[in-house]
Amino acid sequence: MKEELLRLIQNNARIDLKELSVMLGAEEAAVANMLQDLEQDGTICGYYTLINWDNTDEEKVDALIEVNVTTGREMGFDAIAERIYKFDEVKSCYLISGRYDFLIILEGKTMRQVANFVSSKLSPVEFVSGTATHFIMKRYKDYGAVLEQPKKDEREKMSF
Image (cartoon, rainbow, N blue to C red; front, side, top):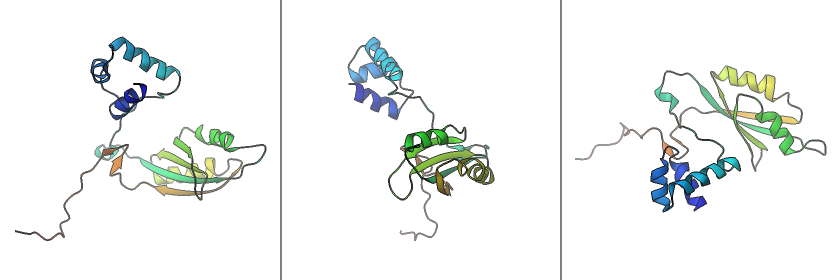
């Protein structure tokens, strides 16, 4: 039942306790206690609202930054990740497989601000040996939600 509860709130964090209890076939108090336990043990880390910032006047830019590091006896991946994710600009930090070691998701007001972060804060971090920055130009789908419906291509031929 715990995994089903997690799936339900992952898809809709605003679902109310009464509806959750009906869907799970459990008492409201039991569901409330389960939620509290999951929050306390760190399984539920927070509740978020997905916002399509393109529909607002807020200017912001998100970047994906691939980071290579050099680990050793004195500094492993976890310790290096901690140095990186402590920066306020860092929204997410992942250890990944492939050509790079970490993937950092960063939010800034401008591309220049992101570039300044990379050059003045991230690159100087001890053990960081290289970065590659990719700017998100447009979001189509985020966290399972389609943000923009595709528009019909005007070049498509009309058939009658």
